[in-house]
Length: 221
Ligand code: AMP
Image (tube, rainbow, N blue to C red):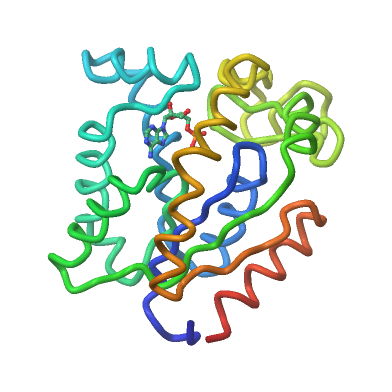
């Protein structure tokens, strides 16, 4: 992708591959809106609407929220002005049905996906990582007790809230999410490979090195 082109990016990878951390770096460096369906569902949950309560049940078990709910949410978000010069989609699409819906949504405004970043890591490494992942329930910041510790133990650097283990990071839910990724989301890599936009990135490198590889992918054809 050339440097001045519209950056319509998808970041994909198994849970705990570092999508959240890398997404934060990407949106800052390229000044793009970060569209994370997981974050959107988590913040909707705080409002306890009938729809979010329904979504919350799927999320707590690590299951995917039904496509019609998720696709509608993304379509509304992509219609906002701040998405005109590009966006970073994180956690969407997760199925081929969602990818096809996304294509149609973008075509309506003459847009298309320009790059799909695929973070890669083995299951064993991810299971190990998840045991040390913590999040802030208030501002959503993400930490790792081994590689990205908060300055004060157990406390969020940004807002001072106590950091926690996410409910769907518990081993039983995490396993369902990993299986879902392998079964439903990995076929998307082939889907986008046909469009010539896939860039594979080794997610087991340091945060800085992974980001460096991402920048190279975004700034070269
Ligand atoms: P994430 O933070 O991306 O891991 O998402 C957390 C949870 O939100 C997932 O386990 C799903 O229950 C739900 N979710 C997020 N994105 C999607 C999506 N594209 N399709 C269906 N469910 C989703």
